[in-house]
Length: 409
Image (cartoon, rainbow, N blue to C red; front, side, top):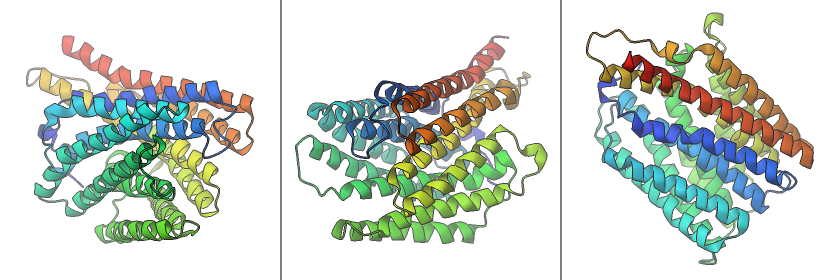
C-alpha cells in the first residue's frame, strides 16, 4: 500500500481552485444543452457539439485531473512540485483558454480560437514544468511515476495537437483533418485513461477496499497501450480511413475498465458505499463506450465515455479529495493536540448518495437524448446536468464550510 506523505501535501488552495471549477463547467455544459438542445447531440462536427465536447473534456475533466495531479504527486508519489506559486496563473490560463475555445467553436470566432490555441498548450506545458522534474527526481514507486509521467506527456501532446487544430480553424495552417482523431485518441487513452489507471492503482485499494493490481499486470497494460497509440496515430495520419486508431483506444480503455470492475467485485458489502457505486456505474459506461467506439458509433461512444463515464469517476473522487484536503488544511491551522473532526464527518455519505442519484438520472437522460435525438429530450438532459453539477458544487462546498467552522470553534 502506498504511504501518504501528508507533510508534503501542497497548500489547500492549489488543488481546490481546479476541483471547485469542475462543477461550474458541468453547469455550463448543461446550460449549453438547454439552449442548443436541437443541435448539440446530432452530428459530430456541428459547432455546438464541438463546444459541448470541450466543455466536458477541458472544463470538467481537465480541471478535475489537473487538481488531482497537483494533490496526488507530492502526497502519494513523493514528487515535489516546482514553482507551485505559479498555480493561480496555471488555473487562469487553462480556464481562460477553455472558455475561449468553447466560444470560438460555438460562434466560429477566429480571434478566440487563435487565443485558445496558444493558451491551452502553454497551460499544459506549464503543468509539465511544475510536475515532471519532481517525478524524475523522486525515489520509489517507479511504476506509478512512469504511468503519471506518460499521462502528462500525452496530455502535453494532446494540447499541442489541439492548438494546431484551433489555429487551423482560425485560418492559420493547413494541418490534415485526420489530426482531429489523433488529438482525441491521445487525450482519451494517453492522458485521461492512463492517468486514471495510474491513480486508481493507489486510490481503489485505499478508498474502496479492492486488492491492488500487481506491478507486472499494470506494466503489461501500460506498455502496449502507450506504445501502440503513437504507432496507430502515425498510421491513421497516413490512412485516415483505417480502424487501427479507434481500436487501440477502445481496447486500451475497455481493458482498463473491465479490470477495474473485476477488482471491485471482491469488495465486501459494508464498503460498497457511494464512491464504489459511482465507480461501478462509471466503469460500466466506459466499457459500453469502448464497444460503441469499436463498432463505429462515435457519438454514442463520446456521450458514454466523456459525458457519463469519466465525469462519474472524477466527480466521486472529488468528493473524497476535497474533504481530505480540507482536513489536512484544518490540521495545519489548529494547535497541535487539538481534536478535529475526521474526514468522513466533513462530508457524510448522504451528500454523496444524493449526488449519485442525480448524476444517474442525468446519465440516463443524456444517453436517451443521443439514442433518440429530440430537442425536448436534449433540453431535459441539459436541465438534469445543471441540477446534478449544482448538487455536486454544494457537496464540495460542505466540507470546506465544516472545516472553517471547526477551526473557529
